[in-house]
Length: 186
Image (cartoon, rainbow, N blue to C red; front, side, top):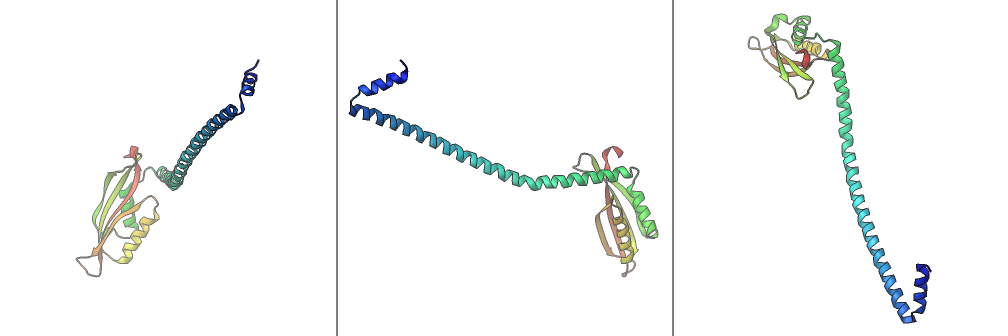
């Protein structure tokens, strides 16, 4: 005889009142089990929903960071290409040539000097050149700045323009330009 037949025979032998009592207990246990199951299911679902919302928020927050990272990596490739295009580039020579091409050599108060500045970038150092020119017109300053701006590899760090001490209609210029160099080449 199977277990199911044994249970069926036992239930048939019970009188009506005891049968209802067993059915009530069985239904009560079933309801309690269903309530526990539904509570666990809803709490797990709620917990997973909160986790998904948190993950989605992090994903949305990471989007601009990843976009910015892509832009930075493109800029890094561009800088690497510029550095590899002219490995013999020297910033002092560039500054001297820019002054010669704009006819400002006679206005140099101090010859361009060079300094190396460590950066937070692992592969690069910043090479800076400072130069002082005196008794310039605004036209000459603009032509020098335009000459500097034409070279993609060089950027202007600091400019100080002041009224010349020798003539009030002329200007003195102190300019710092810089470029990146690979650490191995310095």
